[in-house]
Length: 84
Image (cartoon, rainbow, N blue to C red; front, side, top):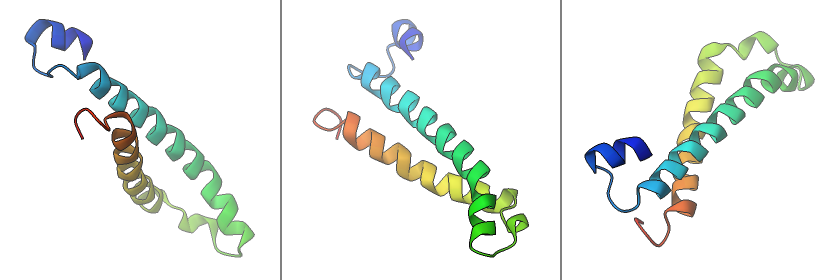
């Protein structure tokens, strides 16, 4: 984002905060997705359900929804007072 801003000036004066928001959200979503995908079958087995029900569509939907929440939470914390 820094290079793109230097070349085209398209992000505005708060481009570093936007870059920090996006980077933090990507790290948070990937970390949460990894943990959720690895731990969900174990949790389902512990409560007596079939671990195979933690198939890819369920995990992907769960991670996508929580990813949106993670992104907006990070954006509200980082961008509060400037863009929000």
